[in-house]
Image (tube, one colour):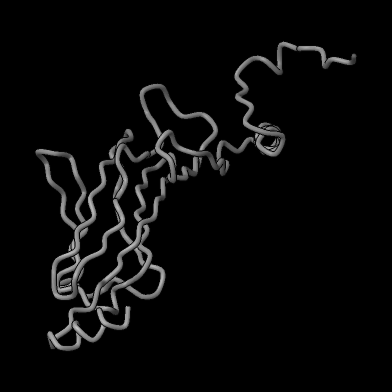
Length: 171
């Protein structure tokens, strides 16, 4: 069986993720660039990490989620809350986006940080059916970004108790 001989160059200072990443790394060595885009999975299921640089200094790291947001089903008019805990050095900036629309109303969508627990909290005040959507949380620093998704399902509240009884009879 044919085996590729190991050379000093291939084993020193070269982390190999895949054939594509080897190609990018070799291109960067030739061109003198220190940047790359390396996608990898987190230890936390459902989290994707994008690394911006090949060599991260010792003690520094890309962002990652220690805990990710739980999908929420909530009645209309209540407050929906998503919580995440992120890690990384330098400390990552956390932002939220939604699939179907913007998050521009500061009275409706509120991002908070709890110093005591280290949780980043995203709240939606007085939810309505319009906020039913898929939400993405981004944690980013100079070495990369981490992304995870969650969903919000808003249950419309029936105003008339007789409507509820009719609904139950149909089932």
